[in-house]
Image 1 (tube, rainbow, N blue to C red):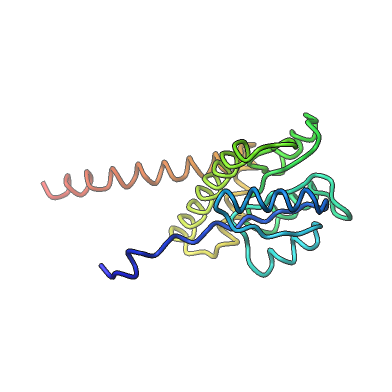
Image 2 (cartoon, rainbow, N blue to C red; image 1 turned 135 degrees about the vertical axis):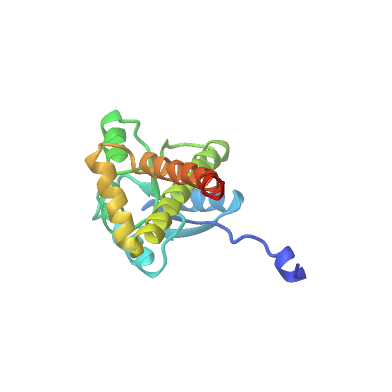
Length: 193
């Protein structure tokens, strides 16, 4: 194995923080960087969309209350126009808002104030869910010879039509593919007999 390849470190995950309060944004940036991630910052939903258009982050952490476009509206746009997984950060523990955030596809909801010990596991869980969705999109692309956006839209539309979470549909799809791959050698063996 090439010595450079064996020493290569995996790229740090990029987390987009969307928060309008400068003090909170600085604290979040510190927590994210201390957790081993690259922190990118946006003070509004519009600024976040511009950054995402240039390069999608691995995860977006959205404040609910933002100037101009609310965090919930930004979430709706992310779900409709991108494949960026997201979770919410809020100063309120309002169950109606939590339900609405979940309907928009949020992978988590943290209530401020929170600690690094609370934040990092929530981020890791959200990243894992995002990976599963990306893998399912890739599977659909390969199986049906389609582009990423079409595959994501089909997956999302199916999740909505069956009233299931996107990540649950992705997990089911990946499990089905794994089962088919396990069965394939058995079928091949039966043909040889």
